[in-house]
Every structure is written in C-alpha cells, then in structure tokens.
Amino acid sequence: MTKPHKTPVMTAEMLIRRPVSEVFEAFIDPEMTTKFWFTKSSGKLEEGRHIRWDWEMYGVHDDVYVQHIEVNRRIVIESSDQTKTEWTFTPRGDHETFVAITHSGFTGSADEMVQGAIDSMGGYTMVLCGLKALLKFNVVLNLVADKAPDAHV
Image: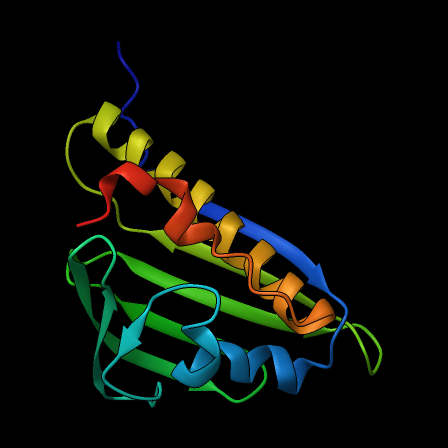
C-alpha cells in the first residue's frame, strides 16, 4: 500500500535585529520592499486589496490578494497561482524581530510541488537576507536581480 503524498509547506526564517514595527513596515510599504525584493508595486499592502508586484528585470509580475493583516504580527496573501504566503513577526525585546515566512498550496505532480517548495525557500531566504542587510546596515544587495542575471529582459 502506498502512502498518499502530502503537499509540501515551505518555511524560511530569520532574526532581524530591528524593532518589529520597522521590519513589518518593510513588507507592507513598497517604498521599502522595492529595495530588497520586487521592483514595482501598485500600492501598499492593505487587507482586502489586490496588489500587483513586478520584477521588471525579468519581465514578470504577480497579482496578490491581501487576505489578512495584523499590524506588527502577521500578513497573509494569496498569489495568482493560488498559493498562500504568511509572514509572522515575533518581537524579541525592543530591538529584534524573528520573521517566519510560510508558503503553501503548491500544485502539480509530487516532483513539481517539491521543486516549487525548494524554489520558494531559496527565494524567501534571499528576501530575508536582503531585508536584514538593508535594515541593519542600509545596504541594498540586489540579491533577487543578481540571482539570474542572464534571465533579465
């Protein structure tokens, strides 16, 4: 008897040595987010809104729906591929925040779902590293753009 496969769930986590309000706002406000993740956004994340994120260097975009926001605690979005991403922000004292990003709802064959989760983990880990460098040292690392320089349009 074969066991049914489970849909993978990806989690990427990072301690960022900045106050929770600053870390949370970096994901809500595209003025900040465009410095470490996507290049353009149709607006600030607000519960119940549809937002478009563009990665202009790759000629791709995603239309996300903001399902839930708890200020300084949690963000939940649904992407155009129906996957769900949840950020949780846990303060550690006044000057540190532990960020956990969970991405779920992968579809396709078992191999395709696993590959999607692996790609997601790599991507969200780069996003967290880029955010940490920006907030801690005010350095823009261009990690997302530099990951695949030959894929730029």
